[in-house]
Length: 81
Image (cartoon, rainbow, N blue to C red; front, side, top):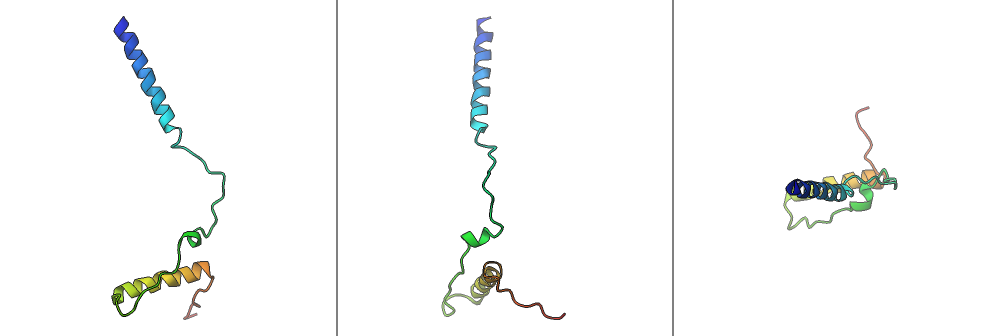
């Protein structure tokens, strides 16, 4: 009978520890996330056209044009309409 009491105590302790550990897993933020939160973390990237490869320069220019369109509202006009 004594071993069953120790087993129940151990099981109960494990359950309590699991519940305490999971307390931080399900948090709900009450702070609204800005629609353009990308602009808070992204910045234009600089490069050196003499030392960087053409693929690197193209990727950086693509990133920078997306940044300009989203964050500076300077999107290229659509053509063909």
